[in-house]
Image 1 (tube, one colour):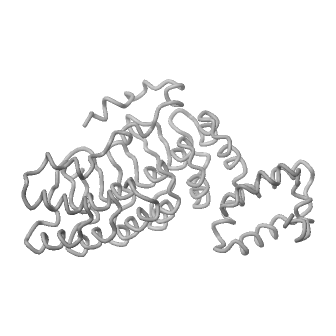
Image 2 (cartoon, helix red, strand yellow; image 1 turned 30 degrees about the horizontal axis):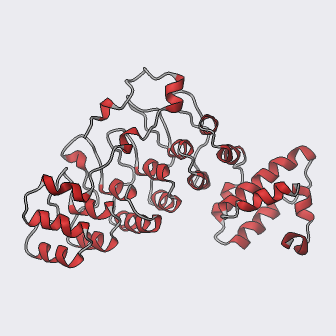
Image 3 (cartoon, helix red, strand yellow; image 1 turned 90 degrees about the vertical axis):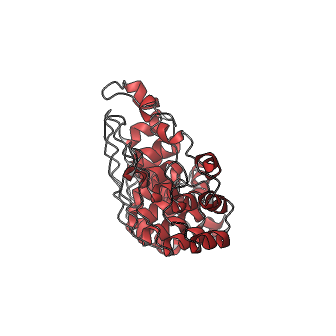
Length: 321
């Protein structure tokens, strides 16, 4: 693999332009070794058979090999353990089997080399659907995987997940103690938080989720850029609006059902508003709608020039129309 140093800026050498355009995931964009790539790294023995069985999702063969004495923490090339390989393809059944057989959820490649890639990181960056990733991440967290460990570039699992935009996984990580505002500050990167990462990559749902979970939108990068500044730089117009009107995000988080959320929102915003504030509150409503996966209604409101004051006085029949 190419050295991370070959891809990174030396400390202090970043100009404003390079900070705006530099991909904080340059290290991550390099392909991680896929399970099938490990064939050349191991002899054709039980370890190779174990790797192939994981790649094919063959739980029975993995179980047999473990019964025959294959070490559950054996290295399958690139210092990946069987559990790392299993969660990297979001195979819950294999992950559970390996964990039940004694695999460590906290194994880190950093114990052997300088990458510091953990099992949880391999799970968070799996090539799979969000639901499958969330299921594997959840079992790792339940087995005491540490969500606040960092890789060599000081990226946390939360940052990696924000990059992918998986809001369900973000929720799991934070609920298990992930620091929502930690920054990737070291000599090679730009002091991004998970929120900054989500903004850079245009992950609207991740931005909303992080705001709901209390992410501080005023924290700035080492170049002095706030998440809002980054949203403007990368031309993510909707995220600019979300960040500008995020005062109601806690309302979305605090209530589980749509009915409760809407009820609370209208109760807390029912006072008469001066005309200047109408637009602000309407922006807050748009944020609420996005949090409820009803963002498409925001355009309908704008199209029909529905102001906040008018919305509060609308009858059920008007709303249906």
